Image 1 (cartoon, one colour):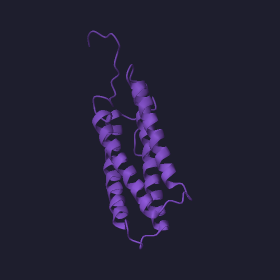
Image 2: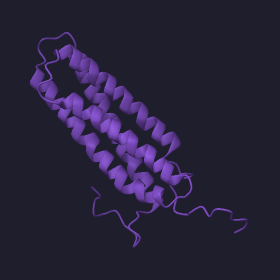
Image 3: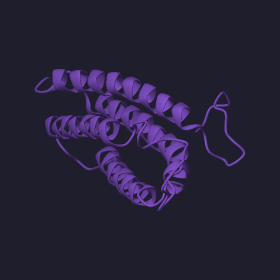
Image 4: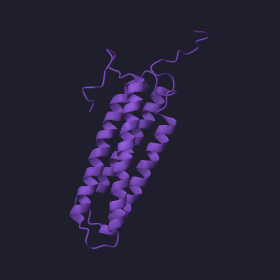
Length: 161
């Protein structure tokens, strides 16, 4: 959800620089949360002291934080990408597909009653966190850049200024 401090233009779009800055800051925060969760989960491997309810809380916190980020990322980027023809709508489609996959993986991992042993659940959590971290790296390299997320539109067949 967009915070009130984010200035939205009459077009409904947030300025590109604001969107990029906000998302990069969220990525920094999510990385710290995910790496902390990963360290806690790996520290619990093989230790009977960690209970399934504790792991469920960690999974739920991870899922909520990432789901909120995905929703805000879509709110900020989809209008910008949709207006950026000819490539933006394709990028929009790829982003939505990626988010759908990530949501599905988070939901599957957090589903109650899947009956997995704690060590297997921790292993799956670790795999998911590593994949989410790699996805954020790729997003920052390929999408959340001034060349892609910008305010000026591309005019097809434009020859000058």
